[in-house]
Image (tube, rainbow, N blue to C red; front, side):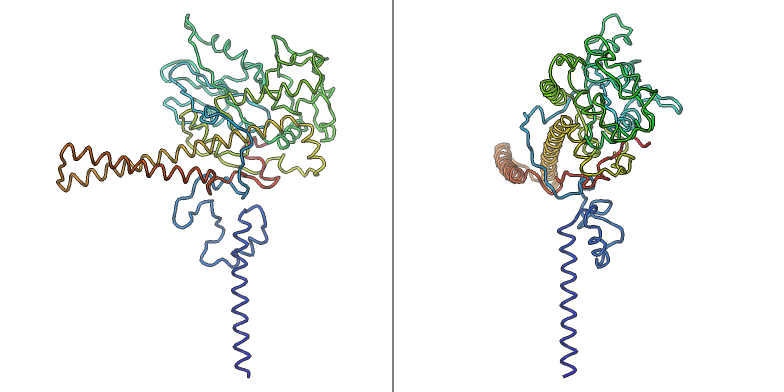
Length: 464
């Protein structure tokens, strides 16, 4: 009787252990994100067999001995991207013929608190160039000259300085940059240049909080010119939110309550053509008329830019820039999580108010994110197709070498007949792969929500 009881107890323990192990695997499957279900993941780590401590799939280790896609490490959530907007093929297949040895110029539109400082440093310090930019310690600007010429190919804060005003917007840059570049040209016959505008956008709530913290510490942008239609706005057209030298120490409530605060919907305003709405003269039309015009203009200008990136998607931003301009960065972009704005504890009702204050920026960002991720998808699919064609060409080359080594000699008619059969087989193979690709538009590496918590919103921005 005792032996039977002991045996039944052992079977029960084995059964419970198997249930526990099964539950651990289900936890890892149902909750793979490292930023969610942390206690469950810790429990799973205690019972993981044969794994390395402190290693997460998608970081430095590969799974099943295969090289992991470099963008999986950036994409941490299960939610899949579903396109909301319809774009044309030219809108999505954005590649420009940038000639750094000619007269082309990249113009960086730097919107406050979007990580533009970090991206601007990448442009002058982190691109593989035949003639790298010359940057010296203690100097705010670098010298970025074309190979064999004494003229710049980059118009940005860290190359030409704030030549068109502090944080000049679309309205200012498009009027100012050509004249500034021509004034730098010493030749009598001014060249016809291509100007490639680029910018970086950021989640509106996070960007707004970052600007508040920056202003709270005493920062101002008084030097901004806000030139539109040939003049700066009057004090009545653009009143200030404070009376002293700065607004240091202001509370978030005070920051939100100022009706003239340019932090609200800043990204939409800076990307739109302000001359369409009478510049800063708000008496020309009502707010309900003014902002839809600005939003449409900002969307149109953003879509027409050579490139734009998103702060929340650093690796994809790097990938699309490199593919657009056929330039390569030396070191990869990193997704840093830890700015002062991200550490601010903001109640849900306050976040909702910030979203309402920035409703046009929210609409613009949703549009930009959709376009950005569709461009990334198209670029990756094209890259996969090109790699497949290269593999097929390599197989043909190897088969040809093998045939030559075997001393096989074909008659011209036989060679042509074999080539025709091989081409048809290749076409069938490519058609089969294309059909699979069309059925699975968003494969496993296409998980796009990089940051699933408030702390993870911001990456690679100015460190204060």
